[in-house]
Amino acid sequence: MKLDILAIGAHPDDVELGCGATIAKEISKGKRVGILDLTRGELGTRGTAQIRDVEAANAAKILGASFRENLEFADGFFVNNASSQLEIIKIIRKYEPDIVLCNAVDDRHIDHGKGSKLASDACFLSGLKKIETIHEGNHQKAWRPKHVYHYIQWKNITPDFVVDVSGFIDKKKQAVFAYESQFHKEGAKEPETPITSTNFRDSIEYRARDLGRLIGVEHAEGFTTERYVAVSSLFDLK
Image (tube, rainbow, N blue to C red):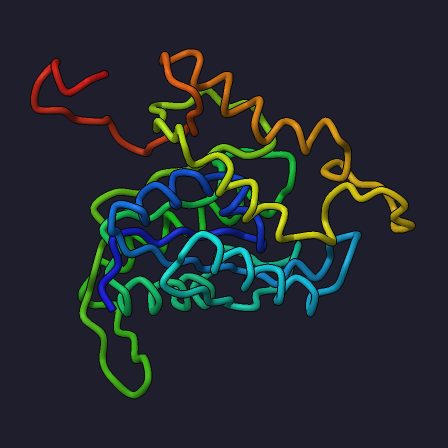
């Protein structure tokens, strides 16, 4: 299956929180989008890895993703090394995405920055013909995505560009809140975390609304890029 977009997250829910509305919008336009989680989020304070597996599958279904896979790297302890890079390379070569979306380049959770660099490095290495990979008994051809973009997470990183996601914030919230174990719930007896507050819950929309305000639309999601954004004409910029 050839993909238009592969969205990679260190943990289940990273993709939904970082770029869920953008993904929903592209899928609505007929684009094929797949999701790759690096870990099962087993170190999360609330819930279990098994619960997160179910929640992640439900969230992917809500978004309309073509598939969701998990590499089951060690939550909190995965490293950017050859073995990890090769596992991601196999996925990139299998699905040949034109665009890869990955974690924020810098963030509160150490896995986000690590996951960002790991995914980015794998995207580059995937294009080198002398790196040989075998998937399901077949030798894979080299493939390098045309673009690698990083979504924004906990920290308010200044985006290099923003995507108008007006009309898709509700779909994003549905996918995010599919992770019921992770968010605020009246009467819950599990420990509080930074994302269980009602403020965080509300921030999913108000941050998108603020970015939208800055570009004159209802809602937007921001991204950073590793290279200059090119346009053919000044009139391509909105």
